[in-house]
Image (cartoon, rainbow, N blue to C red; front, top):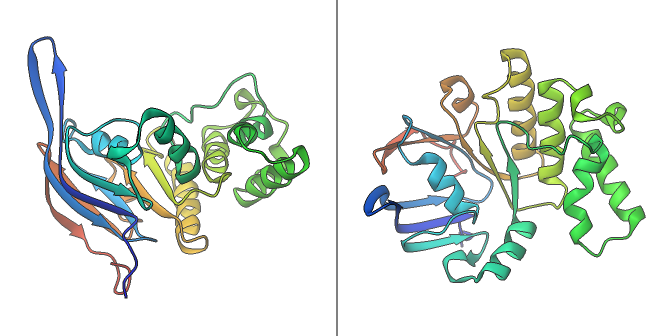
Length: 236
């Protein structure tokens, strides 16, 4: 018996209102993302890929259709339930890191755990393990301004995985990095997928980054146009 997909989308639609004008962004999207997949969403600017990522992550609301993510029908959750679901189920990786400049690497990673019932000792053990995994055990007390772009993104990734989410969503995670740093981040994301089994959904303009994913889906003008790279056998 096959397990439930990490993401199951049926006939999803989304439009934005600008004054009296309705601007369609996503039209009739149907998509399954298996648990443990690593998907790159590609397409030109304005194709709707970041909007789709935000809907999957529960940051934005769809206008119509069905959207099940990590076992929850997130269209049916109220705002409080949605916030709780996001905190437990989704880790976020952004292009510009979104770190708090007045906090150390350790404190930035610890932030999501402050909303849990974990003791101080448990929080510290988890943070140390996460920073160790991303190769920054020796940078715990450094502030973002004291870290390179690649190191800041590693801190952001440690923060994204600290609550052990089911899904990681990444919006242009290498877009602000040089190629060497981008390679390091892509290798780390690959490890999170293969070693920890994290389902990863990444928006990117970079074909080189997209090729590191297991599968690539193309969006154009708010519609899925096909698969550019299929997941390996047994992963779809």
